[in-house]
Image 1 (cartoon, rainbow, N blue to C red):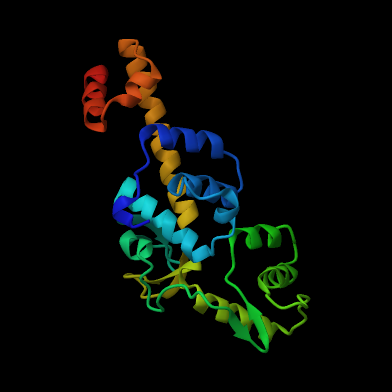
Image 2 (image 1 turned 45 degrees about the vertical axis):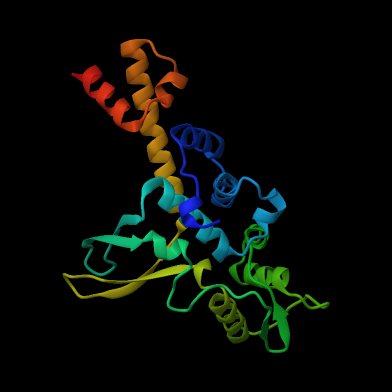
Length: 242
């Protein structure tokens, strides 16, 4: 679905998503929001979407609901300076990266074939506490060969991981940062799932405050308050708090 056709989250949507997803694992929160972004897609289809396509859909929903500018804050790892970070969400929604878009065909590494990593694969790997074993579980889930058991060195493990990352560049978005104070340079991961969920939670909490304020002032129901446009609701809030 093109970004222009992606329906924005309504006030009621944000409240319902936040209520249903509070306390869930981030992977489950991602699927919950994804189901709202792609309501016609079966649950099995959503959980088996490659991570890059999942992140693109979430970025489209984010742009439609909150605008294309993603603004956040981070801290320099060397001097502790606080930095503002801004990303164009439309680039993520359109799948535009330095490396291109996700590939469709299998990825071949050292005689083995793999498909792209999905949310289901990550959920299965997350059940393993050991990091290396979790990586092997992830690769075995994506392996298309008849013999799926994988035994490899750390170097081979890194090689396969790099090939899979190149095949699905939006599965992980790395931001190159530079501190203006100490000139330290480093990279950080932009987690679209966590970023979008924090915005949904912030809007839901603001809406609950507005509902409480307007219901106390005018005796309106929650449904009546949510049916108001944001502009009209803001004006009523100003009058109620005057």
